Length: 172
Image 1 (tube, rainbow, N blue to C red):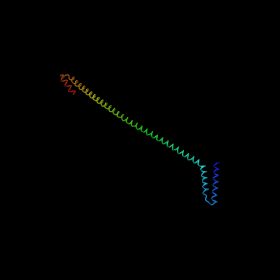
Image 2: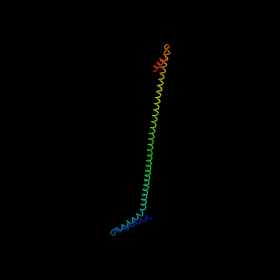
Image 3: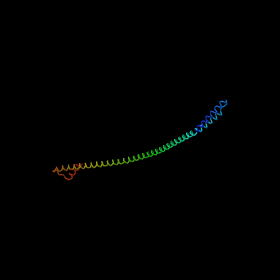
Image 4: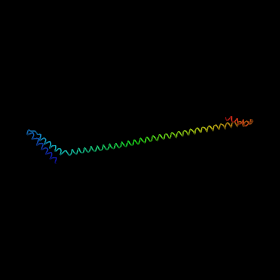
């Protein structure tokens, strides 16, 4: 209702002052100024509050979006810091694993070398024992052969010294 009344007042004053200046032949600066001031007052009365509300809402919306962006930025920085900390921990863990692996390799290498050395010693000992056994077998076989030859030839009687020399020659 107020708006209709103001519109009627505005239109009435505009028509009142607009005709007077043209009829008198003078300047119409004062009526135009009055008309403009009335128009500006009515416009302010009708549009000021919605315009203020619009800009206030816009200001609040921008502030809200700015806060959201700042919150996301802060969250992103925290995630970045956390990721960097996890990366640092992962690098340290990887370094520890590498060092542990190197130590284990060193220990295993020593153990394998020691086992190989022991196996070689056992093989050498076994070879020496085998050679000694073969040597004994040969000595026994030769001794047996010599004794069999001597016993087969009963006609040949030898003295003990000759007998021993003969055995020594066959063995050597």
